[in-house]
Image (cartoon, rainbow, N blue to C red; front, side, top):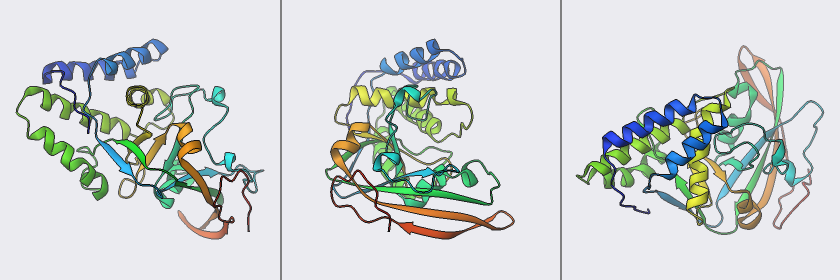
Length: 284
């Protein structure tokens, strides 16, 4: 945990949070610059989590109608043509590519599936999970739990405990202000904003604050909005995937409708396991 000591009281912090909320709802690039500048004016105390070498990360893609198999590792990795990213994502600006993934296969599936994410009625859906294994230790900034999700995911509650206890043990006004700040940021990351990318302006700005301010941070960790009870979502700098991870295996699943709002897995196909810097996916 990095501690900064710039004093800020709860009244000043609450005012800054109100300004952030107002700017988020404004549809203009100026409002995003304003949000970034506000965050850059605050010195954070940041909780870090270390994932050891050998940790697993999963990224999934839904198949379009004409896509039978993904044959290249790059098909499952981060978006290379970042100039085609036109909107804010939860952790990216327009024109910025990050590697979104999870540490749990099912969570990764739920996050991308139109059946679960959009509640879309489909006869079937094909999704492929790509699995990466870290070849070095991975350092991430953790978004803490908040009052809306507390008690649903023991993992993030445990990660948050020591950081929250540290601030609660402090008697100065500044410590209370930072508790309010992290409650606010955690709620922003755990808020569903489907269909309205401007709601991601605060989370994208915070992610870029981390990337710019803490060069040793590989990414950020945050709870899922759709499946908050298990696992974590991650947003990594793209170079981390190239430098600190190796592709391991791909798994293609078919989820087929078998009843009223009921889906079952009816197909399952694995690729060969890769132990090197693979570029091609070889399906069994």
